[in-house]
Length: 293
Length: 272
Image (tube, rainbow over all chains, first blue to last red; front, side):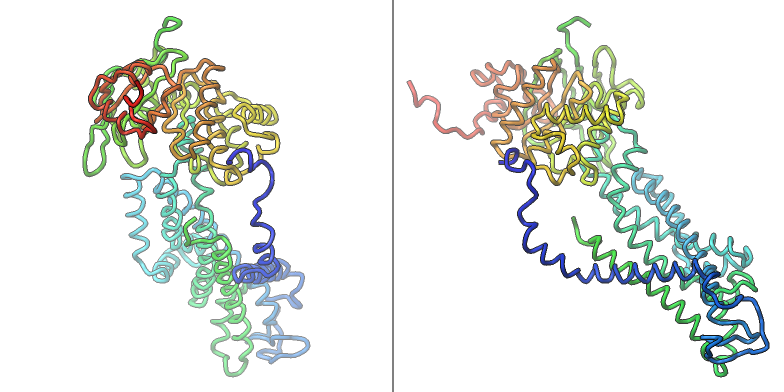
């Protein structure tokens, strides 16, 4: 029946049950949708920050530590700078560091994980043992050590965080490669004389994309936290450019006088972290990561 | 090389599979020839070394294992065991192509069938773009896929098992190989589809004059498909005979045992 019956019609199962399901998105689809909306808000607000921000984030004024008012929605900080403007503009630094660092970690993780998993043997052993050494340090301790050694600048912060998250990324890439490389279509590709590099790019990488996407989103959430924590400790981007962690550190001393100066950046950090966690969970459900194909 | 001399002549081929824990001699010195346009069957039970022999000719090793090869594999005057890996890559697919056992897993599930045929064409013939696409449609048509122009953009999961095997055969024959190695090409298919695939292989072989190395454990598959059969057991060829002889008068004990293992509708000797 195989050849004649399945010429052009779509499978019959499409009509009833799954169509009904399509009207109401699954829980995973809701999560993914919510995550995407939050991400869009985050990216738009920070990208357009210089246009939206009501004040120059570095402009001081005599009205320090004010509460919420029509002029300053979230009040002002210790030297009279507008908190809302600083959150919007500060998000640029924080998110820029986060995205760039994770992009580098992802790139390094892809290369190391693919090479390690696909080539195997002593190459695999060597790469994984080196990464294990990095992995053995607590993320935060390692980050503090590296930034302290290199000096707190934006490029150093990015480099540090990329180094810290590369081992985890490599492992996420390597694990599925180990099984995918044994699949028949990889051997079939080899049997038509395809080069190993092309096999990896065309026949192995696409099979391992889903877990990588989910892991990347989770790493973004963790990285926001690491970046702001490092900034909080004074290891972030140097002043006067605002960033969320630094704002929190500055405002901490005046918490009783002007609670909004703490609440503002804290909410921003939580919102950004939550965005990536929700996104990761939605992606995991929708991409079906974790269940076997 | 004469016109009807052997296109492939294997001498004393050995294959040792080396894993971390042990070394297994899967092929223990086998010798055979395949002539141009000839179809030769390799038959034997699981683990007798027939698939390893096929992979040895292609110099492919199962993933995660090293295979040490010995002896010689002379293909059109070239010892395949001596050529460089780069040259070997140009031979794989272009001169010697292979069809695998399981069509459900031998195609990349996330790339369209057409793109996978075009990959092969681009790799070996330099055809690309619309020309490659046209050729791919032609090939799908030749292997009996209905509405090839429409099906070319389908993904493998939209194909049935038999159609996927046809698509894999289309890939295998796309560069007009001199030798097609079919490793249990019908084992994973329904009986009716098996017959269609075998007829297709037979037709393509006749049209193109290519040699066929058919590996199977099923006497029903080799009958009517090949001229000669090599019976393998324990890494050795225990009997080589014409297809008629082997059914009429199997000389080796193991061949007889294999033949007896084929279920029959009526016993021999029941008729006068």
